[in-house]
Image (cartoon, rainbow, N blue to C red):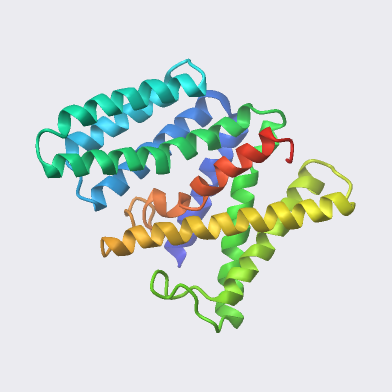
Length: 261
């Protein structure tokens, strides 16, 4: 537990520094998280090293090229398609490696790009904190309510410790996180609109966060792994800590673009 707490403290400090400094620091932080997470995922699926490094190279290109999002997407996926076409002639294993690599790009790289891109939106210096608030609140409330009053087990075939009570507690945490963001960070009056927005947006984001955690658990269970990695003592790998965030960040980005947040 001590090791877990120490890792959490310096991890939160690193996230806070990246979010506060923004700019190139935040982008480098996003690249680092994406690369380590891709490496962890593809490693547990036993993808060949050259393919892992190729995927990481494409991820770096996606982050640093000075084009708009659609142009970046077009360039990278055309390159991936051509590479896939060439590699698919080798053997079945090469074809599977390609599919895992493309999946890792969609599952990890794109969502982390959206997470970092929140900073560039209007009110982005505050909005960048919302994914972390929602995920941390969801995880914390789910954990403590689950171990306190959790009785009804759900999704036991994927994550045996998950309970209905913990799930509902996590949703409560997500709602409180959105209220906190709107009222405290955005200095919005707590009226009926904010009350309803907190319930609708907070519960929706919390369910997405739960889904991200369960999906990651399913991937690990598929390969008989407890964690994706070991670089974070007491927590596992980087992807173990970002499995909910990578699901939540694109939804928050969409809500922000729609003017909901």
